[in-house]
Length: 150
Image (tube, rainbow, N blue to C red):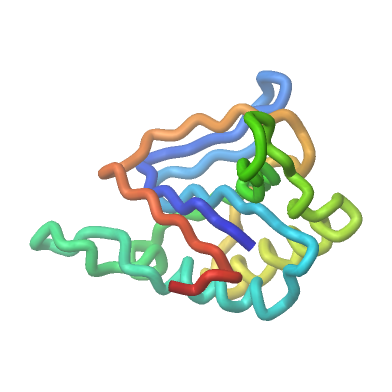
């Protein structure tokens, strides 16, 4: 699994110009799922997201987690995070999981994130053409890959 995590002041998702989900201060998570992902990937990524210290303390140092600041979470599926640009100029998405594998993993990820965070998580619509609007705070943007845990 790959995730781009952005600290936001607000974020929202629309489909066909209709609101789907929105959050105030918190984290927008763009999530890419590949064929080889499994429960261990979900568990590791969820732990990282809810515990990562990305929010400022009273001294302006990123020292608080999304849980500690009672922030919100919004997850948007994004298969393009698994783009391979090794050959040519047209990205290949061969590593991105097909919907029959990705949808159950996406749903398990959302459920695990809600349980770990202790409150509902906003989502996009899996497989839909979405517009994602965000006000990046900082900006703070982190990339995580469960197959490359640096």
